[in-house]
Image (tube, rainbow, N blue to C red; front, side):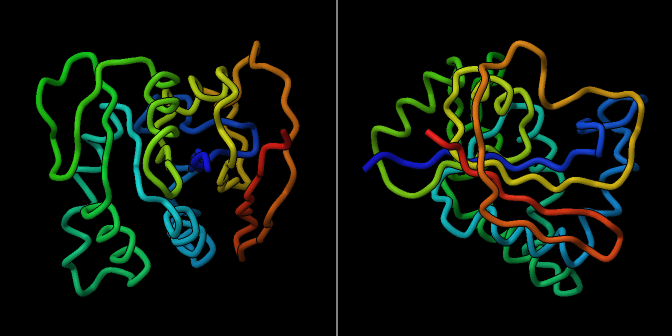
Length: 195
């Protein structure tokens, strides 16, 4: 049985994963990611995942934030559960510059995302989660290797910033596996690839 490849990302209504000021411009994302709906959605993304796949920048960003959450008794229990999963899960970090892993239970691979995912799918069990690493998500969309998308869509239009879905992707069809709406108008949608 082949492994399912999933990806998680929060985007604005106009399809952007950050605002016009650059990657740190997350004002249209963060307020919705910390709602009950956002945190419940976070819990769903990792419940069947046994491998987390990251690009280098995202891995380093996660490493700077999540490890301290696992032991923070004041943190939301859903955040702590995710942080504990992240600490324990097998992690693969795609990088052309790192020579050693920045994380326990992680290995660095210098290879195209599509090649790494093809290799991961051929061995092991459980889902492979591309966890908010846009460069990896885009590469796997282009290679038609994603089976499930977990999207948190925020009810804001930023009018600038980088979009998730670039022109030139192969045409694909998806079906809604789950859809929830939060109190602030954010939506958590799970799309499954129709093959």
